[in-house]
Amino acid sequence: MNNFEALGIDEKIVKAITDLGFETPSPIQEKAIPALLNETTDLVGLAQTGTGKTAAFGIPLIQKVDFNSKKTQALILCPTRELCVQITKDLTNYSKYFQGTNIVPVYGGASIETQIKLIQRGAQIIVATPGRMADMIRRKKADLSEVRWVVLDEADEMLDMGFKDELDIILDTTPKEKNTWLFSATMPAEVARIAKTFMNNPFEVSVGAKNSSAVNISHEYYPVHARDRYLALKRLVDCNPDIFGMIFCRTKIETQEIAEKLMKDGYNADSLHGDLSQMQRDRVMERFRSKALQILVATDVAARGIDVNNITHVIHFSLPDDIENYTHRSGRTARAGKTGVSMAIVNMREVGKIRDLERILKTKFTQKLIPNGFEVCEKQLFSLIKRVHDVQVSEQEIEPYIDNVYKELDDLSKEELIKKFVSIEFNRFLSYYKNAPDINVNTSKEARRSENGRNFDDTKTRFFINVGELDDINKSQLLRMICDASGVRGNDIGRIDVKNSFSFFDVESTSEDVILSSLNEQTFNGRKIKVEISAKKDDSSSSGKSFGRTGGRREFGGSGNKENNRSSFEKPKYESKNNFDSKPRTGSRPRTDKPRRSY
Ligand code: AMP
Image 1 (cartoon, rainbow, N blue to C red):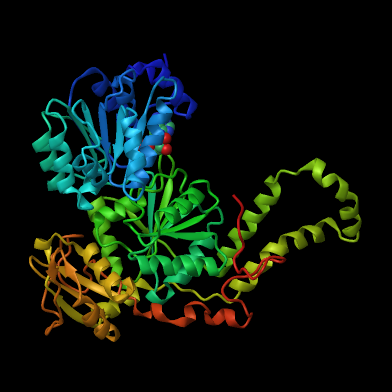
Image 2: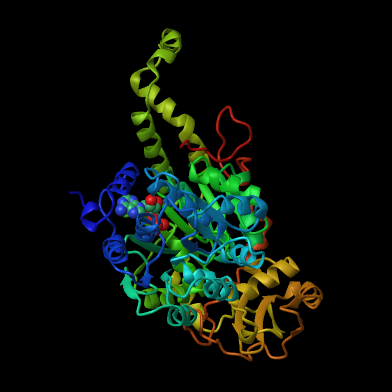
């Protein structure tokens, strides 16, 4: 009997998951599966993505659902379309040795008519986002009267995304006698309310403490001046030649900008954010998932629920406002028992945020230095040598040419030949990095200057806005609203204090006019927005909600990196001499300044 059969799992499912490469159950599967198979129970599972929770609820569901019936017996709710598609795919895989299965994904942004048809064909399991499911219910297109199991996956995310009313409607519509299985990475009050209102003495499983991050992620931070953020990003990427990573930015505009710069500089990168059409998002995700794309630059919202295995690095180009977002971002790596690295590029003001993160996540963050040119070149050189060493030679295909190749290279010794081959790639990095400056900041010196009263926010104006916690807005949402309405970049927005019925935020003073004119035309939840320049710049202390910090310049909530507008970002001074835009070029390729790595 193998490890899965010992949990009581049907052999057809064991066969299917063995095909997927599952060998041993993950901790949450070990705890949840026997309970869900053997008992008629509600369940609360505190677990993040990457722990194997989809199989923890999916396997018992497949085993319990009657696929001979056409009735909808199980409903799985999750926050995003991405996750919805992923769960459907996973459950379809687990049930591939069963006959008559119909597991239907239901999500917004796609034809509701097609989804209705699929449901009406007899969907035993519906996997849905709350908005579209509530819509189906309103249109009376889904018969949920025989639902026996409701799964709430990533409940905290669903509530965070404002799906509270939809969840209440859906849970009220399904039969009272059902079992509810709720999974959440965190247990904020709203999730606890759902558990209390809709569940009966739930069985509890927890893997990892609340707000903890996976132990197999190493957390690093790199202090640099704000103006050097992008250079730092490129060095981190260059120093990790095999990176398959995600880069997180705070806003859509910043995300787009960084992705474009990387692409222009020849990196195999693309962006994922809310302004893309569904088709564009699908295309980007498809390329990323198949590893045709090496670097995905994303906003927190767009990246929710992304489940791509083997992500090696998560880079925080800018830190998020909320602790949950940090945990969520870094949880994109180190999935399914792998290890991963979470790297935060921070300016001096943000070092305090790192301390907050360490305290709240009870995790050590290691301060690291941005590698210098020599280190990058060394890494690239040995990566190249490894590739040469490991490359598969297509003997047959190369055969017709090989005699002539030998002839052409006849005059070179083995040593010369090696040097020349290696130099073809290596020279590009060498010339790019040979005069590369040290961009690390001396944190102790900078910290002293900061303490001595240097004001990092001197160039910012403080604004008052008439929305606050009572309007159900948090720092990230406020930041997004400001950026979206005004076009001001996230990096130009500093401290944000959300109060009860109003908020304050700091923005580069050069953007005063655009902030006033654009935001004063907006409405929020039906209320007309009013924005004014606040009389006193320091008239509020932090609400301390996001990262539990109060007052002072070190409060979590703004990068203040006004330098980012510098055009010299594209052409750092040490490059212009060599007439390189930003990166060395590859021999015969068109002007691309970054070596492309094959996957
Ligand atoms: P999840 O937490 O459900 O998003 O799962 C994360 C990843 O781990 C998915 O790609 C699963 O296919 C994979 N996975 C889940 N359970 C196992 C297991 N027992 N052994 C190996 N891989 C697993």
